View 1 (cartoon, helix red, strand yellow):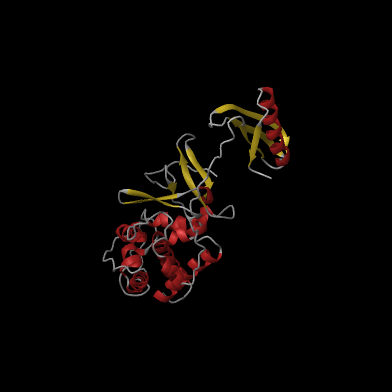
View 2 (view 1 turned 90 degrees about the horizontal axis):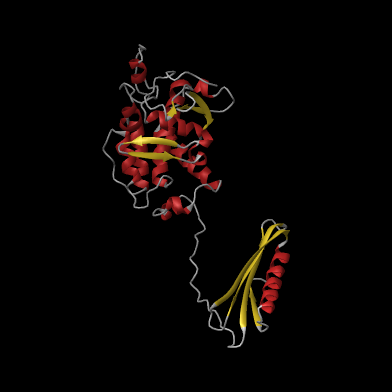
Length: 320
């Protein structure tokens, strides 16, 4: 599907274009539209192939990993931080006229109020701030809030848990608010906390959350029942090259096959008693097994040693 350049009047058309959900789901799954400056028109791309970049302050953050957030969540975050979420205040700017109030109080529904300042969402932020041992961030600005969470750890990254959790809070605040507005559900902090917790547990059960994403907070992961297999660094080992006798030579050879059988090669090196390189060889064997490649490497090395007058040539190999 194609559309004109001024379809939605977005200045940064090189970024992902903000389109209504109804247009995004015509082919069965949510997609995003991006302006192609070479072709001169909008091109549809699968969201799974894209990384959503959020311009937060002076930085661009990559909301990467469909498995972590999901397509709809990534799309929502991009729209949220570009002020294109249809809250009541935003709809009034578009010319709509209707009474407006938040789902938990009588204040008009705006982005800062819904996601930061309302009594319900403040309870959510306070809950997770206590869990991660953070002070309450007194700000009504979403950018400052997610910056505060991200850089509250020296191990910050795009995929760290302290980057993931704030975005999940924003996403499930939106879904729960919609459920309250359109489905008659109750807009409660406990429901948002439950959805964030369930999402994290789903990621853990699917082996998507790793210990690296909890770096600096592993004991908090354990408190949630998340157990990770930690990689223990191996102790260094001393490797010694034993020199041959003064009248002998040493052959070190290797052969390998990609696919077994598959494209194979053989190579080796011959040295004297002082470790000086006398000869190096390499052969492409075409299609062969790993065993054939290993044996050919030894055979070629011994053949070349005899041809050069080095009959006393001992071999060292990396396989039996």
